[in-house]
Image (cartoon, one colour):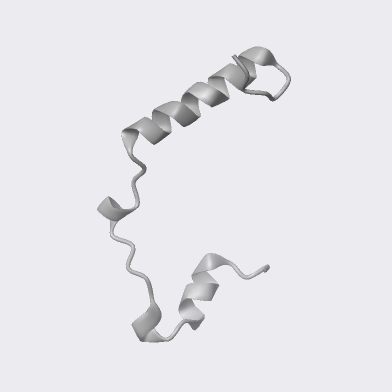
Length: 52
């Protein structure tokens, strides 16, 4: 679907709009840390893999 999220949200009926409070869309810290660890490992491997 090539519709931008903001455009998609604008088309939803008012009652179906999803609230996006700033404090409600944060990833848990451990998720960020694990993701960053995998990215760092992939960069270290140089081949796009996250194998240790």
